[in-house]
Image (cartoon, rainbow, N blue to C red):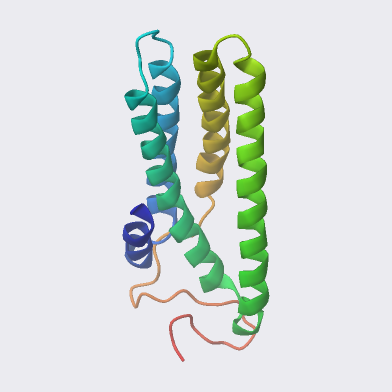
Length: 160
């Protein structure tokens, strides 16, 4: 849901602002998710809502980040960049899920809510790293809407 909107915004505004906003939303969702689990009567609806907010925020980070990668690669390196990006996405997802599952299991041995609370705190820590990295993404494109590629062939992204 958030990726197409963030992708369109990054085409107009550059990658930095949509990614920073998405990372902030994800951090807020993770913090509120951890806070919601401090109450005994929290139930499952609030943590699920905050998990949705984290997912929407991370979705808003993904499209601008990937778009900025493709805009800055020379044309002949796009296939390799696409392959590397796909592998890193798969690896990051697998490792991230495994780490959060391990944290939930180890911290929630006696109390499952405690395990999920610690899981949200770990997610928050990772999202704060993403938030810091998002500030390094390119900003607004030039007025013509193009990002100049490295001086390999002098081409401008978005032109044939």
